[in-house]
Length: 505
Image (tube, rainbow, N blue to C red; front, top):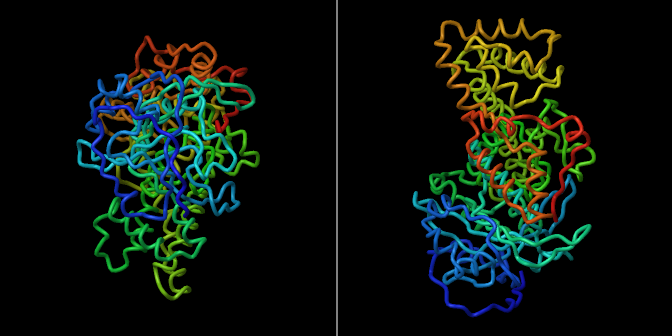
């Protein structure tokens, strides 16, 4: 990669609030471009994630100060930072693009958090880079606050995810279909290395950099594999396992990513890039919300198979490292990939057993049938996915009415299924089982109509009150509260009809 000259920066003395140790910029030369964030005219802090700041070993008060805002807006690059735009390729809706890269993002640097874990600190919406492909590199308030809401909700649900440290209004307009208020997101991740990062160097047959990248990932995410005889095959297996866990957890809460391109799949196993994502309400495996997914490639029910497809692209990139004999490398990689459906099924069943209050062991096929039959009942009666599982615990408390109300008076098959379920529970202490179910079946998710209301208020009226209220509820998803009953209700038929999400670029 050519090195592009950095942009202008403002020389301002700022407190050293970050202790950077930038392993990617230091060791991955030729895999990124040194760059600086664009200056913004009137930065204003919309939201600081103070708890995450403390987890990162940062001072929240310093970040919220004028000097901290200068850093979070990109107007000042803090001491020790090495901002870079990372290179990567990717399959987008099945078509390969050999060069994508950080078109509106910058990796500011890496810190070691209070648990000793290495975390990336990155900007999103920080202006053009050499990878912008004609875009303006900016972001609007709506998409920035969407990522804040959904990523923090996912974290509260226990799902591996990138997180949001801060959202900052930039004081300038960005132009999409119409002018919108601009904003900048500070994202935190275990790393920003994607399947597409490997594809970038594999497409160029750059085995030397491909090897360095794989060794870097092993050192960062799988250090126990460093001395493994087949460490690159073992790396593929580890990434597949992380993705099997991640996809099972997505499916367990009705989450639809919306744009599962290979450049949006991390090797760390974290959810990344909350563009046209949404949570399903009425259960239907064919549910699609993304406006750009016109053929349903990334529908809810297709996500596990798409994950395997993406992992196959990673395996293709790693073939030269797995074995010098191409046929043997392909055979060995294929064995790992063919195990993915069983690994996903294993984690999915574990999740469903928790949601149904079943013992962790038993007849796998019988339990899988029990779970699938409940899903089929919900689909037949258009039952809300989140409430359908949540209201099951009421049955164990002798209050079947909340569940029956979801299915309606003519709930064909529900009584028979409940009898099978309760027979499977056997003599288990029902109150204890119900409490356990409520600890894994959320009552609050980022319901689409509430998200849209919050984003519209912030965008059109600079009113963050709906955003703050929704954030406060969805980051405590399991504890049902009478005062928050409206946040648990699905959208009306009018609100949900034809609902679509957009990527925000």
